Image (cartoon, rainbow, N blue to C red; front, top):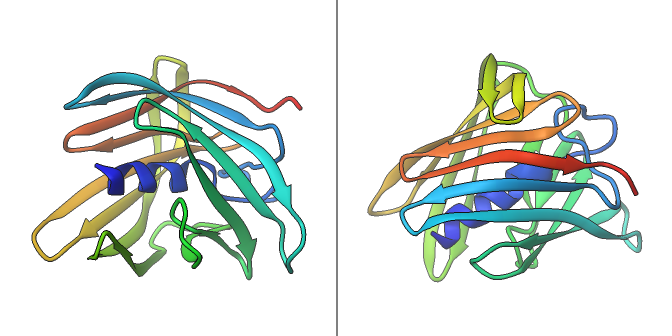
Length: 182
């Protein structure tokens, strides 16, 4: 479950102001209703600060949920979004800033002495209806494979908003509100 929560936090906010599917700036806030085997809850994700000491700004994403608060670091470089996966010292290439249908990429991540292989593919543009409304969304298929299991996840991003829905075999997350005011 920790691996799923890390993945959710990563794909929620990745990007720059130029990347319309993944808007990000200080003060941006998204609120999600999550449903899993352990019940339903609310998860709030907020950009709380920006570290400008390196070559690229690093955005601090505060994630508040019933699973415990967490900080994830996100940065953009060379046409990609990178994440520290919620606490690591390394950054992983997780999304292109300008995604196209058919794009695909992979990376490996180790967590609790277990290796996970992440595979991403931009599948299509699709209309998706959630409680908040109907959106034209970019659909990503994410496969996470470990030595003993493999699961497919789907993330839907709306232009100018970011992640509006995330689904997995035993997990669903749906945007119920957002605020891009400062």
